[in-house]
Image (spheres, each protein chain N blue to C red):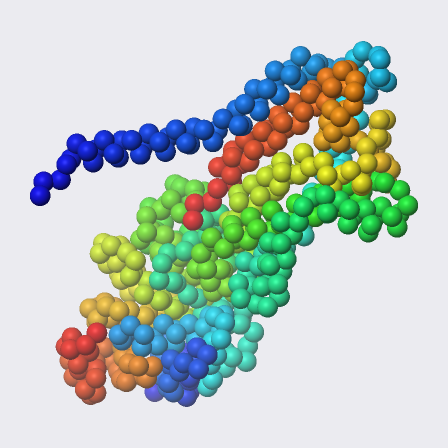
Length: 281
Length: 252
């Protein structure tokens, strides 16, 4: 029997076309969001928008300096808490593939990734805010750090697992102690993956609102004291977008654009650093 | 009797309950090339990895018996000292991909925290690369990453890295199995020069290689050391039937 070549070619062309179409459809939401936020936000952004504090309702102008600075503070301290913890945990998990403790901690990391962010916010409220007696930027950092942990741990673990065991053996055979092999060979070889995990997790939590609702709480004034309530970009967007005032809506649109561009920028930087630090194995 | 540098007495190695090296007694004379050959899974690589205590790094791997380096039991030393005295070259070239050629050669010192003056470092790097017959090819690109070299060059870089530490013994675990014939022959030539300064133990699948490079040959079969003698005798007049069968290609 002669196969119907024309039909086969047509069928494979059609399937190819469908796949391409679907792939394109997947990019539409992102493009639509970027375009829409850009259109709404770009007219509101100027130098004053970045350097001024919000004005009371009824007054024109005003900026988001407090939220911008607050976000930087909160995310910075969250990273300071989460990065060392997760890198060490990631090393442990990649080095101990079968241990009991490794099994349980890997399981907890997976489950932690699925815990809703609002739950993390409430738990931190009861553990940190209540005993301290006040909302604080610090408690916000803790909540965000908890959210960062699973992302970074998994990316560190996966990166280090990719590094061939022969490199570790080469180090040990040179008479290097185990810790030197880890710190001087395995970690540097996995640097690009670990860095990208750090940047992606920062990008991921920079826009988190729920964990900050009952922790950092928000603050209409400029505050740099970590033990006091602090404003942040997602909180500002949440509060101002749900308010009835047009001036505040404008601030929220502008803040949304800034937040979105920061996250996009972080993702691009991630791509670049990954390439820059890539070690050819 | 010649002075032996490595001597094993009733040495056994296990993976869990699996008995992979059975009661091996062997004496390895100084400044010789000793080939260890045998079919796959005969325990030759495991035995090699027992000499510098790399075997015990695998979960569930254990060993018993004596392994003496200059009459000192390596299992009573700290493994770090053992591995400083007994260098190793692996099956696949494994230069550190994050380091340059220069840094790779000096890695045993620098990563161990041994501080050397710059002159001394340069001397060690040049000497080691010269001994491993790589100096001429890489002297202008010492600060490029080692992974840009070809497979054979990478393997010679790994040899340079191992001999830079001035070990007494160098273990080579099928060092040419991942290389093309030209690289293989350059590494085999290199072994001749190296035995002036080091004692070499080379595991090989390849009988011709064993015949070409070694002074003495050991034949392992099913975890046992079947026969161990001068290479010439092993290949012309083996005493054991199993050796005879292996050499004549009746099994492999």
